[in-house]
Image (tube, one colour):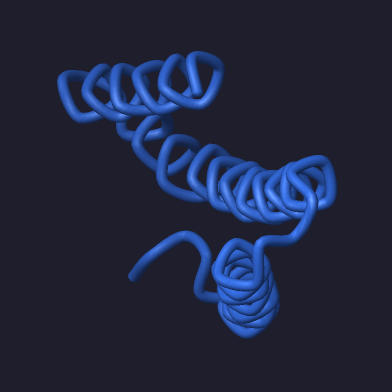
Length: 93
C-alpha cells in the first residue's frame, strides 16, 4: 500500500487544480498575454506542484520510511536513501 492512500483525494484535487493552472498558462501564451502575468501564473502552478510534492514526501516519511526503520537493516537503509534523494531533487528544482 502506498503511503499517500489516506490523502489520495486531496492530492488528486491539488493535481487537478495545478493541471487547470497549466492549461490556463498555455491559453495565456496562445493569446499573447503580458509576460509578467504569465510568469505570475507559472509561479502559482509551481507552488501548487510543490505543495503536492511536500505532501507526498511527508506521507512517504511518515509511512514508508517509518515502517522500514522499524524493520531496520538494508530495507531501512534503502528507504532513507530514497527519501534523501527525493529531498535533494526537490531542493534542486
